[in-house]
Image 1 (cartoon, rainbow, N blue to C red):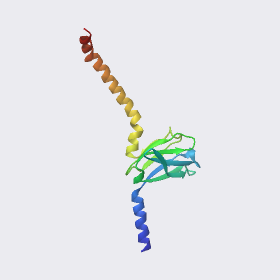
Image 2: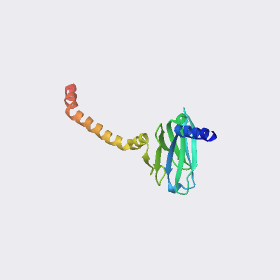
Image 3: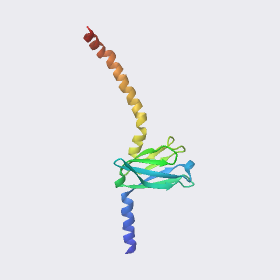
Image 4: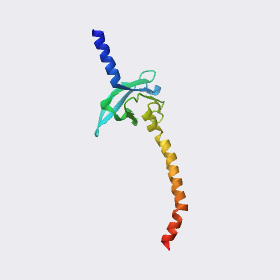
Length: 145
C-alpha cells in the first residue's frame, strides 16, 4: 500500500514538473539559477551547481510559466520560455553568447527570431524601395505640381 501511494505521488509530481537540462563544461562547480517573474517581481524558481561533467538541471511547474532567465554570477542572463511540454535542453561553452538550444519548440523559435527578423527586415526594406520608385514616385510628382 505504501509503495502504491509513493508511486502515485512521484508520477503526479513528474507529470506536473517541467525540466531544463544544461550542458556547460566550462561552468563546472558554478551555481546557476532559473528565475521567473510574478508581475514585476523577479523570483528564483530553481538553482543548481553545475556538475564536473558540465550538466545541470532545473525544474519548474505550471505556476512558473512565462519568461524565465538562466543566470550565473558575473554573466548576462539568458532568456528562456517556460511553457507546457517545453522540456528545454541548452548546451554551450560560453555563457550566454555561445548557448545553443537543442530541444524545446518555443525556445528554438525565440532563439532563431533575430536571424529570421534580419531577413524579414531586408524584405520589408526592398518592398519599401520598390513602392517608392514605382508607385509613389508619380504620386509625389503629382503632388508637387
